[in-house]
Amino acid sequence: MIAIIDYDVGNLHNLKNALDFQGIPNRIVREPQELEEAERIMLPGVGAFRPAIERLQRAGMEPVIRRKIDQGVPFLGICIGLQLLFEMSEEGGPNRGLGLIAGRVVRFRTALKVPQIGWNQVALQRPDPLLEGIPDGSYFYFVHSYHAALADPADALGLTDYGVMFPAIVRHGNVWGVQFHPEKSQHAGLRLLRNFATMNAA
Image 1 (cartoon, rainbow, N blue to C red):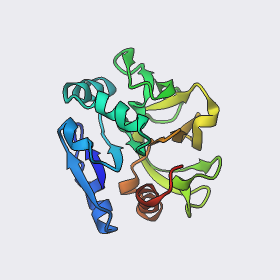
Image 2 (cartoon, rainbow, N blue to C red; image 1 turned 135 degrees about the vertical axis):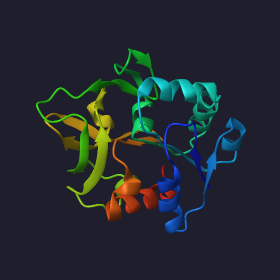
Image 3 (cartoon, rainbow, N blue to C red; image 1 turned 45 degrees about the horizontal axis):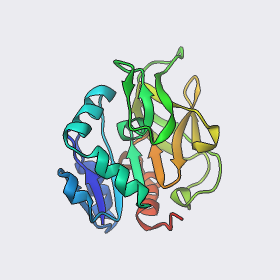
Image 4 (cartoon, one colour; image 1 turned 120 degrees about the vertical axis):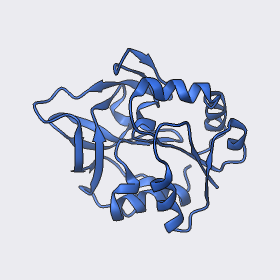
C-alpha cells in the first residue's frame, strides 16, 4: 500500500486518481500512525516551502517519516515534497528542511520567466528502477520558482534546463524526489508512478 501524506498543502486527488487509474493500492493519510503499515510513501505538495515544512511538523509526520526511511521503505517527494527533502531552502528564509538529501533549494536565477510553468524535458543521468521504460528526454509538467542545488551531483537521476541546469529527479538511498508533477505528465508520469509502486528498490 502506498501512503500519500496529506498535510494541507495541495489537492492530492489528481495524484490519487493517477494511482487508482493504474490499479495501484493507495491511501491518503493525515495521522502519523497511519504511516506505520505503509509499504511505500509519497509526499506531494504545492505552494511555499516554509508553510509546507511547518504543517508537516505540526502534523507530527517528521519522526515517523525518518523512522520509515531508516527501515528501508521507499519514499518519493513530489514538487514541494522534493524540496522538503533538502537541508534548507532560501524561500522565505532560510528555512530548515528534512535534511534527507544534502543540498539546498534556491530561486531560479535566469532571464527566463519565473515561475517555470509547463512542459520541459528531462535528461536522464543513469539507469534507475524509478525510470524503467521512460525514454531519455521525456517531457514532464513543471510549476515552480525554486529548484534544488545538490551537494553531491551523483544524487541527480535527471536534469532539466530552464536557463540553468537543475536536478529534476533525485535519489539518495531509498529516497527519491521529482520536481515535476508526474500525475499531470501523461504517459511518462504514469509510468514513473507505476515504477515507484512496483520496483525492487534495493
